[in-house]
Amino acid sequence: MIRGVTNGDDAVLVGENFIVANDGVGAWATRPRGHAALWSRLILHFWALEAERDKSLDSSNAEPNPVQYLQKAYEQTLSATSSPNEWHGTTTACGALLHHTGSEASLEPALYVTNLGDSQVLVLRPSDQEVIYKTKEQWHWFDCPRQLGTNSPDTPVKNAVMDKLVLQEDDVVLAMSDGVVDNLWEHEVLQNVLDSIQAWVGGAGGTATGDRQGGGGGGMQFVAQELVNAARVVAEDPFAESPFMERAVEEGLAMEGGKLDDISVVAAVCKHRKG
Image (cartoon, rainbow, N blue to C red; front, side, top):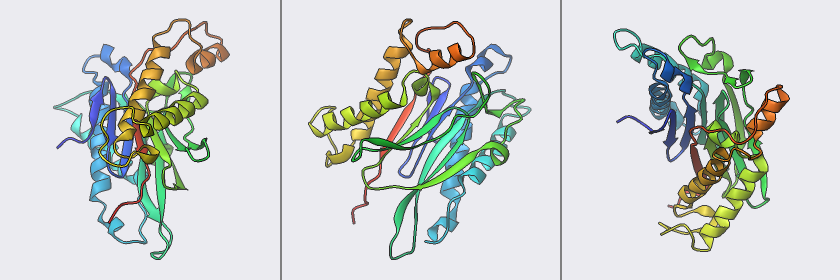
């Protein structure tokens, strides 16, 4: 089964311990045999498969290697989109893989975050109402991020950045395409998520599948949708102030309003496994 879901040219993965947001570069739609959505989805699919296949992680001392998984995914996508089934495209790649760290007697949840390009992983600690981690955007130049695919010099082993951080229970992890980060500032994302969790705990957002505390019981789907809605409001407002507009002005370009783009969010919350 093909892993993930396609949203426009974006592709997202919602897994029990792995979330991903890839952003296919839409300009390929104007090129012969261009198919950015295929590239973002295939990279994601093979990346997820490589993580699933790493049986060394059954050992409590082993650590995942998501950059190497991504490299293999990139190579498999190159092969799958070559002649006679030739399709051109490029995509950013951004994912967060949950594992553990420490001795067997005192294991702690550890997050392995991998980024290439300008999608973003953001880690929030609602108990302290703060952002504790975010990936750094990688650009060749303004509005041209590092990307994997046709005619791009970038590769995972050369250009992807991987960070490891220890989580606490109820920390929230977001994987987002630039349709969010180009339209909402970091403090707006934080406040939106905190408000959504509070609303969910209070009974908003539909039927829960378990304990609502901390956004559990299905609350992360509600959190993600509220964040998408907020980003869309700015994206569709030609007079809004936005992070993308601010960067464009810094580059000497005349622009105002939000940036219309595919908007993708995966939200996850760290919880102790029962049983």
